[in-house]
Length: 226
Length: 235
Image 1 (cartoon, rainbow over the protein chains, first blue to last red):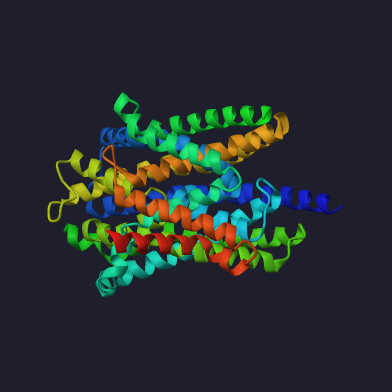
Image 2: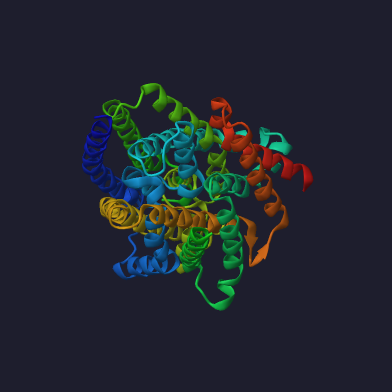
């Protein structure tokens, strides 16, 4: 009975989110172009069709692999509702996923369960309120605020990324600690050496993930035998 | 019209705010729906609030990362554009790289004082085109990816699927972590030190304070702060 209630609830949630999500994605897609259109109209300077195509080509060459690899890679962690949000608001790896993971952790969610899906949604939405508030405050008052911060605080800021990602990684390791450490070593080595053998920057992440899954397969088989 | 005038004009603030409003509105609507569905699923409201609170605490630290780039970007592209682009998709590095490419195409540059009006317009279009890659593919494909994951769960051995997903997540975050540790093909030792401290701190907090709900809510923020300031003290 309890289980049925949970399944019915999550399937209703998914249907509603699917309809809402498409609407928001479309709105974001339009909003994304409004400032460019506005400034072009205001100044009378429109890039030509050829220029726009060249710009798009440059973007796709530099980041095109990411358009595909990232949404697929992050999906298991953010689910459908999360995907509708994070590919609009960004900062996925260092901000949205940590927030979602913590929301799941403190409410003791089982990985991949309907409850985990709800908590990831709540976590990501909550992180949006925080980041938008902070970015807005600093955009308005920022240039005055930053110099007021003590030097020691500012110095710590240079370590934000390794600090948050190191902590998130430890959290992800969880029960598979040994596997986690092995994959971390392989990822560091891959990130250093794959570009040196000619694998393009955008593909390094994908190759690292494939290597990680292969390592997990070997680990799974050896542990099964033991 | 001059670049300086338009770059920080009130009207540009207004049109740039539309994206930020969409982002916030979506979060509000999804949050409400999640709370409603949680109730139907028998998840207590208090638990939802606990999850929300923990996510908010966790988000404070990492949100300083876009804030810092925001300050730098404001000086180059003006307040409204920097504010909008730090609130939407496209990592700080990506936005910077894209605007550098776009301004370069018209012989302009992001260096202080060198940005031309044409360069600014190309940067705006370039960032919009680039960001739509993620919005279109990440956003519109979400339902299909959901189906694919559901199919995988049904068809394959459960233990194996779970391990594949865990391994893929580890490979993904292993790469993100590596990117923050490696600069131009070399390990940056002070960043490596910060990463290891954060890893150890998080592991200790998760294991030794497992029973303490309050500490768990703060755990990621706490591990992050410890790492940042231990590293700052040493280097």
